[in-house]
Image (cartoon, rainbow, N blue to C red; front, top):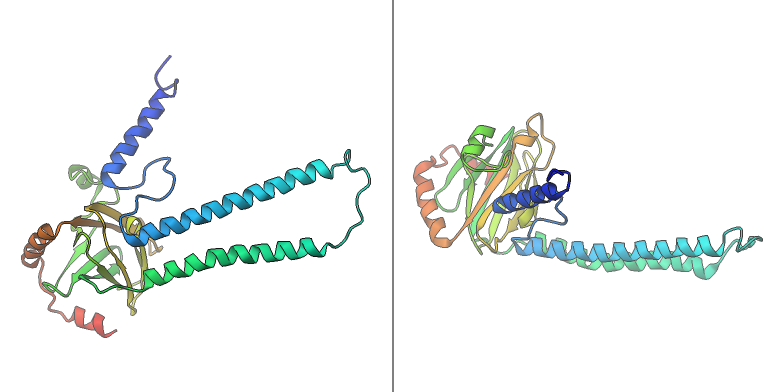
Length: 275
């Protein structure tokens, strides 16, 4: 009997895919749940998600129990003469009040999470993100005052660079670990959306408008995202790659980036700040 027919081959394939994807910190086949949280925001999103799972599971069990009870109690054999009851005040109040209580239980942590995401702490690094068809332009206005474009790697280039397909880029973002990164998004043509799942970030980039969000990476590594707003024919080719490094590594990259990328001298930063 072949190894594929026994199912062992499939198991090894899943483990191999899991290990490979874990090295890149990207989703893998048959994954359950979110990617591992790498920021305080994403940790809170996971906690809220788990709360919703518990509530959903409890509701499903309750509905299942009611269905089983009704089938057994009110089938034709057990109850040949059906009841003529048309109203039950207590029951009607219960199925009105209980959902309200559940919604209140959900609303309290939901509003806390929304406030936590919207209340941006004092930033250590400001990153301006401009969505374009079909690539990203990044600006570091506070230190160095430079910008660069970030385009998706071709399949061949990604393979040579050992980057995941459709996620690797030629010029990744570099940010320091355990520092607050303020992200300012806008669009140059149509609406895009800058999304970084493991950081709990998803913010629209709208032409003529500035949106603000933030993240604080709790561990070093390479993290990937994609444009999450349908923006045209090459929407699937707008990946995001963020390298989170130590403070010393960030300072070295910053010094090199100032020389590598031309300074912003066309007034772009000024125009963005004034919008």
